Amino acid sequence: MPKVTVEYEQHQRDKILQAATACFCRRGYHRTTIQDVCEEAGLSKGGLYTYFQSKEELLAAVVEHSFMGGLDEAMQAVGAEQTAMEKLDLVASTMLSRLTGGEPDPAHSPQLLIEIWAEASKNPQLNALCAAGYVRWRAFLAGLLREGIADGHITPEVDPDELAAILVAMFDGLMVQEGMTKARVDWTRAVATLRNGLLEGILTPRARADGLSLPPPSPSKGEGMEFD
Image 1 (cartoon, rainbow, N blue to C red):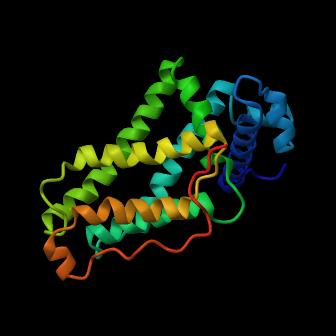
Image 2 (image 1 turned 45 degrees about the vertical axis):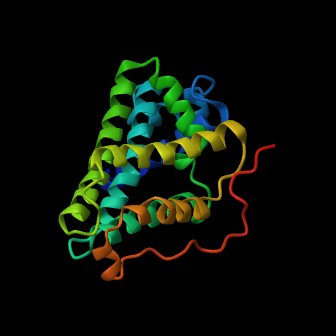
């Protein structure tokens, strides 16, 4: 029998997670069966149960991938040599690329977020997992804002923890609106509005003197959110 490598096991786990995510988005969590996920992944039930023991365990893994995958990518995008505002801009660009780059990824879809929230409201373990993800995201953003205050580029009147919570809420809120109304969000325009409407307002005169004023929004063919 060929030796099973760590890389192979990770590949199989990722394939199952992608299949589960697609099924949860398409059919909803409760309507999705283990057999649905197996067919999507091209595996037998035995092959799936080698890595995940239940649908509940699958959902928890999907939540971790959805929450932490974006955070890990954002943290890797920033470097110590950059200013806090440059780091915030990079984080925004990184998240934008996840939402608009290439083929749509169900892991970053409004439908998945709505499914996760609905289930987390009834499942204490899943609720705790989601809460931990939000805590990490807010702490990461608040840390960047504190760096900006320390280097004199962000006004000290800003409460880093409050603004970090608002930034996360704005992102999630737009996703939920898109999922509930089926109105497409022009994410390029939304991020540009956030950068120029909110982040520009927290810059100090020193930041502007140092050339850190953010550029104007990029032209977009979209009209933002269009409600039917």
